Image (cartoon, rainbow, N blue to C red):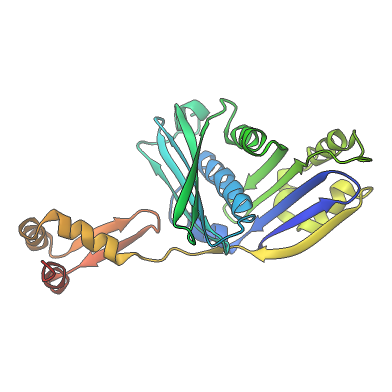
Length: 279
């Protein structure tokens, strides 16, 4: 499974999304060495970024990042309008199993950036971190920015990232006033194992078999991290030809780590000749 799927409670003013990604998630965290705590935080950020990008009405991308002064200084996820995802975690120290949320994230805030490729404009929102965690922070974001009560569940393993979001839409006449409380209570009974192992239809039937739920078409979510070699060539160019050639002579080749893709780019003498021939 590598998909996201919308659903609607037809007799209520409640909508939702279900996410389950296997290979895509494995590619995102491959060879990263994330601890269990960091993997869960990265999963929470990834899940919400995917769900927000799933509603984009134009070509572009959505970027979510948490910046703080804890051991983890940056959590970053980018999702394009066609559901291509990449991301990374930057840490400035060793994370211990005993570390709590404040130790890991410290003081910081969430930054949500929506880029419209058609207008080439960006819109940015800043969200203070809720002391209870990233999920409450996300729920605050929906409540404040979209005026929608929301509940989010996220579970991650080394093999799978799954999540479920439900949102209370604006009131409509003849809707069940107790529906929101009933649905959130039922949704809260789901376990991490169920969230990770069941597809949308199975999970929704398990939780809401007495409700009328409409499932919409699935959208595929893929990992994509294209190398932007020109950007790294500019780093070498800005270093200056003399320093760059001295570094090449000292090391035999110049290696630059592309953090977000977790890959190294290598530059030799011919590359430097080409880069500095543009001067």
